[in-house]
Structure formats: C-alpha cells, structure tokens
Image (cartoon, rainbow, N blue to C red):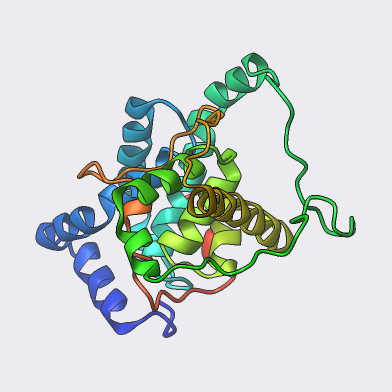
Length: 251
C-alpha cells in the first residue's frame, strides 16, 4: 500500500481487509448519504440511485485487496460509484436525451477562446448587505440555491457537488468523472456562475427565479432530507489524492 496514504486511512483499510464489520459499518454510516447524493446526479430515479450506491459498496468489498492507496479511501470509493453510475444509468440517460427537447432558448455559456461571449454583461458588484450571514442562513435563500442547483446540467452539478460540497481537489474530480482539467474548470465556472446569478437576482430584486427545468436531475439530498444547499461549505477538508485515483481497484 502506498506510503502517501494518510495514516488514518491506512489503519482503516487494514481493518476493512481483516473483515472488521464495525469498521465497515462506520464507513457506510459516514459516506452512504453522500454517495446517494452523488448517485442522484446521474439519474432521476431514486430507486436506481440506491441501487448504484449498493453496487458501489459491493465493489468496495470486492476491490479492497486491489486498493493501492494512491488516493484517499473516500476518493477511491467516489470513483467506483462514478463508474458504476455511468454503466447503470446509461440506458436512462439515452432515453432522457431522446425525449428531452429544447423547450425554449438555451443560455449562451462561456467557453475558452470566445472572449466575453457568455460572461456577465456587467461585472458583478458587491451586495449591499448589512449582514450577509442573515441572507445565507435564511431558509428562502437556501431554497434559491437549491432551485439553482436543480437547474444545472448533470455534469455541472456533479462538479459543483464534488468541489464545493465534498471539497475534493480538481485532480480528484477529474479522475472521478473522467474529464480533463480544462473541462473541469469550465464546468465549475458555469455551475458556480448559475448559482451566483440566482442569488444575485434574489438579493437585488427580492424575487426568486422562475422554476428551471431540471434536465431529469435533482440536486442531491442527504439521508436526512436536507439539500446540498443546506451543507456548510467547505466540508471535509484535508482530503488528499493523486491524479491516478480513478484508476485503482475495481473497474
């Protein structure tokens, strides 16, 4: 096992490999809700999302012996889920793509090399708030964020979830989702911009944006029913991993 793996992860992996059921139960308790939230970004079907998580845990058990420690244990598990989710949700994704027509104009998105096309027409200015925390803590503001997340395309939502909720590094996200670093940056920029635009509209005009089409994807909710917007950001700092994290263990 790689010496780069943090000591707590190394000790946990050894316990899991020895068949320690208590250690495995604690791992499931700590990650299952987050994995379910991530799985829901791949499918609109709650039962399928639960099946994806279950298959992920089976794959973790089968692949523990092959885990080499080139990434954190958590990153490795998320990578397994991403691969399982792509396989299990492929049929549903194809059906959604064939059934979902463009009902209205699609906003122009920023892309590298296109200058300011798709960027803000005017640079954002600071919100004149006496107490920004009051807006952040208000239930209505969190609902605005939740609605904005629900309107994100699938891959944008996945990148925002992994970077801003799970606090994973860019390299880890690239390996989990099998995307390039440039693509990751663009997706993160687009997702954050849409959420920021919704909050800006709410703060300046006191109005919530009209419900957006969800593209068959719902923003993840934890097992307690809270949305991704309810999570305090960033979460779980200190996760480390190498750029090869997505290649370990179970395929």
